[in-house]
Amino acid sequence: MRRPSVAFFAMLVFASTLPGYAGDRFGIGVKGGTLGLGVDLTGRITDRFAVRGSINAIDITGSYSDTDVDYDADVKLGAYGVLLDFHPFKGNFRLTAGLMRNRNEIGLSAKPTADVGIGGTTYTPTQVGILKGKVTFNDSAPYFGIGFGDAAKGPGRVRFVLDVGVLMQGSGQVTLASNTTTNFGNDLRQEESDIEDSISDYKFWPVLDLGISFRL
Image (tube, rainbow, N blue to C red; front, side):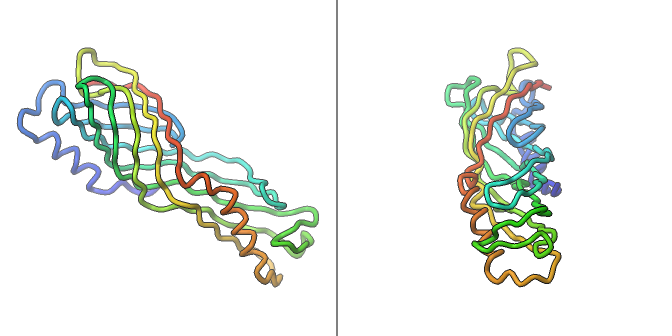
């Protein structure tokens, strides 16, 4: 996982030094969802605005078989960054916007045991050898969403929190390579393009997080 930037923590320190920062002003939350497991640090600026630092990550394994080649997939999910929460009614409901450092990527690996089609051409397992590749998205991604919960405000110290939104990570870029000397021509490039087309919906990564917050 990439290291969080200094700005991530600087924003929280800045919020904590604002005039009148005392009492129900700070909270921490733990959560889980479509970006993995995460921790949020919240500093309340006013009754309507709060700044939130968020770190989320998880690694999982799976498979990908939308083309003729069956791939093993090592999936890294997660993001970290700074979010601004706006509570229009001074309650738990919030509108959120921010910029996240995107961790989402997929490692691909395939070792066919039968003839497969790549870019419209049939290749034997010996010709293909081992295919390895990666799916990457934009490093920086805007986040927009809505949510429920205000970790830094009373009454009560423990609350359930919910976030629903979208991480605008852009279209996935695919790179593939074989460990053989086979001349694939443009067939590997076509395989990359086919995979990119099949994952095009994920340029808007859906975010759904549920967790518990604690007012400090």
